[in-house]
Image (cartoon, rainbow, N blue to C red; front, side, top):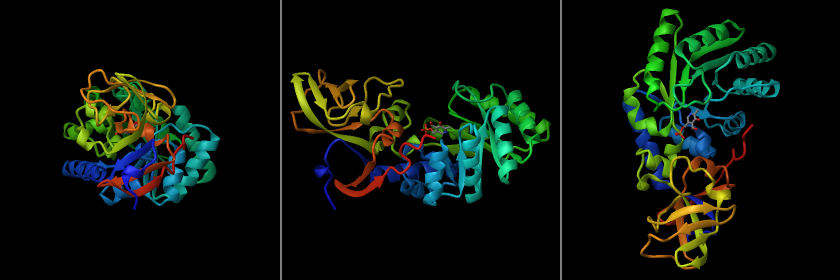
Length: 353
Ligand SMILES: Cc1ncc(COP(=O)(O)O)c(C=O)c1O
C-alpha cells in the first residue's frame, strides 16, 4: 500500500473515514425521520461508492443522465433507480425502455406533455410501462411545473396516455421556502381528484438536516453530502472536518511574496463559484484565497497568511463543488490514515447523454 505523501499531483483524494462518517450520519438522520434515502450518484459516478451507500441503508439511487443509469446498472449497484431528467427523443426513450427491462424499478421525472407523449409512445413500441413523477419548480427556477394545479393537470393528461404509471411528485431543491406550501396544496388537489401520490421526493444536501420540516416527503435525494465541499460548508450543512474530498496540489511557482501558483486550475478544481469567494479552501493556509484559475494554474493570494509555502510544498484544496471535480478526473484516490487504500475509476465520468 502506498503513502498519500507519494501521490503525484494534482490528485483528487477522498478521506475514507470522513466519507464513511458522512454516509452513516446522513443515513441515520433520514432513517430517524422515516424518510427513504435515495442518494444522487452524480456526485461520485463511482459504482463502488454507490454500493457503500446502498449497504448503509439507501432504498435505491438517483441518476441525472441515462448514461449514469447504464453504468450503475451494469455494475449491479441498485435495482431501484430514479432518473431526474426529462427524457426526450427516440434514441433516449429506447435506451430508457431497455434499462427498465433490466431493473426492478426505474422511474423518471417529467414536467411537460411532449416528454409524456414520447415516453408513452416508446412504452407502446417497446412494451412495458413508464413509471413517472411530476417535477415541480418550488423555487429554483429550473425545470418543473409552476403551480400545484399544473402538476395535477399534467398528471391527469399523462395518466391517460397508454402505459404511463403515475408515481408521485418531485422537486429540487427542497430547501426553498415555497416547497412546503407547494407540496401541501398539490397533495390536497390530488386527494380531491382521487389520485394517489405514493412518492413525494425532495432533494439537496442543504435540506438533509431540516427534512423534519417536510413531513410529506417519502424520500430524499442528496449527493454532495458524501464528500462535502466549500458550498456545503457555506450553507451551514457541513464543517471543514466533514469534507472528504481534497485536491492535492504542488506549489510550482512563487512569483511574488504574496502569490503562489499550484499545478491545477479549472481542469481539476472547475470554475464553479456559485455564492462563494475564491475557487477553493486551502487546508494548510485557511486565510489564503484562490482568486483566479486558468486551465492548469491555480493562483493563490497569500496576503492574509502569516505563514507562506515555498516552491515544491504540497497543499490540499477543498473544492467549491465536489460533484463537478469527480467528473474531471479518471481516478479518485481513497486514503485513510495517510495511506492509499483504494483507487476508484470514475466509471460514469463524462456520461452526460
Ligand atoms: C434533481 C436533483 N436531485 C438531487 C440533487 C442532489 O443535490 P445535492 O448535490 O445538493 O445533494 C441534485 C443536484 O444537483 C439534483 O439536480
